[in-house]
Image (cartoon, rainbow over all chains, first blue to last red; front, top):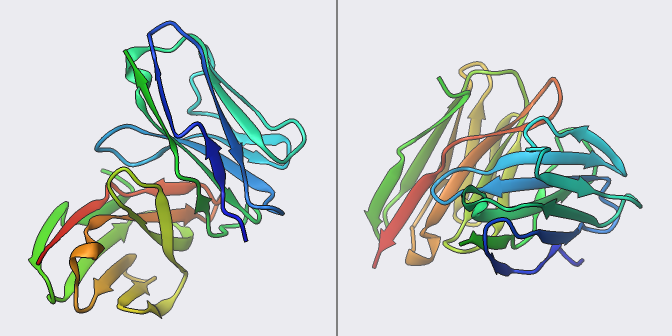
Length: 114
Length: 109
């Protein structure tokens, strides 16, 4: 069974530029999560989808971050414009459903904003 | 006070030692997760448990629901076990994961 796929694995941009990350969850997983993990800290949930609907985006900085999962399968997270403090690893995870299921994580995208 | 507390924050041990990492939580949960993160690597789920004990190879996870406490044990530790071990709980209200700060484990040969 293929795992959660993410791309790119690494991205370096200058502040005020835009960037987009892509995630393809495990086939059949209805729930998809985007996390931000700053170096030395635990992951912070940015947004959670159930199929193509948003379940929780309370910690997503909506002035610069956006995410979509239009067909309920793969998802894109965008930052526009990026700030220095956005430097982090962006992790995508998926689970079979909302109900406390085990989450499977992708390898992450390491973003450096200069 | 954090809803999920892990101890110790850092742990260095010699190869072969028995390792224990503790996790306490203060909220109602539907499940507790132990995850592993290697430097520069993604996160791997080790265990998801809501009661009792689970074992996988040299790893053992236990949970005491009444005391709101869980432990992760590693028997016969090996340098490849060096990683950050994270405890996270699924809230019983909305299943959102609340993460501990992680325990950085270093096993010296």
